[in-house]
Length: 302
Ligand SMILES: Nc1ncnc2c1ncn2[C@@H]1O[C@H](COP(=O)(O)OP(=O)(O)OP(=O)(O)O)[C@@H](O)[C@H]1O
Ligand SMILES: [Mg+2]
Image 1 (tube, rainbow, N blue to C red):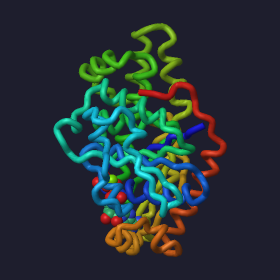
Image 2 (image 1 turned 90 degrees about the horizontal axis):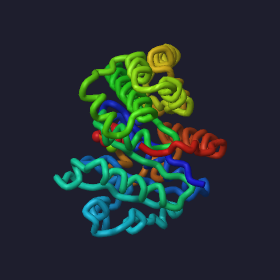
Image 3 (image 1 turned 90 degrees about the vertical axis):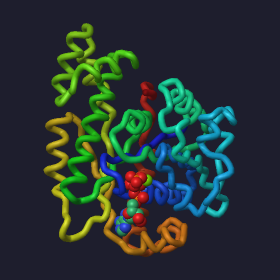
């Protein structure tokens, strides 16, 4: 059984790639078969953090049909406990604007990869690709910095992801496109109203779709001065988005992260006892427990 976990944020540069690369490594060290996927279309850089400068094959080869399956582009890091890695694509016109069909082909192929845990870096932003890749997974992690703009961007990201998930529960893909063009959907109630108008039972389906949606929260670059009132944040998200965001952990500001980046190694490998690495290790241990409790829900897909 494989569990898919994606990482996202509204704002760029919150530390998503750093976090997911280190979590992938730590889960591999714990004995899990892990596959890390760089789905940051146009901004792929996870390979650099792993010291792989020129991946032989990347997602571009899959998207341009040079290879038929994402399994054909897996790179195995034998020095990192057999961690498997699907490198992302550079910013090419062919891949920046992939179609819905291409996206489906990609997600179908990823779902067929045999692994215990698949970790997906979806990149920053609230474009449809980022939202769809985020929602494709069984579990989601969102990373924010402690500052108010980053928190607001994360809130907007979660709001859009929630709305898209709800719409997907009662509308077809083409109807979602039409609905999004004609409505701005500022609140969940507007989605419920549309559901009621669409067909009987659609509102219940929309509500039900959020039952398994509990994105896990990581606050990165935490410092004494920048403390987030997580209780208030969770209350606001629960009130306005109807979802709970359990805390996965905090990662302190730590200069060793940039030093590790310059050495092209994950910080947990190079400086395992530095505060950020210890926090990442604790998060990986918590995540492993969540994974072991988890049984995927049947409605996987976009
Ligand atoms: N806890 C931390 N302490 C110090 N520096 C950090 C910390 N977390 C991340 N950084 C630094 O912040 C920068 C951005 O990190 P990263 O590339 O992982 O962010 P990202 O969210 O993936 O960005 P993007 O949205 O562009 O993909 C990097 O230089 C990284 O080394
Ligand atoms: Mg990144």
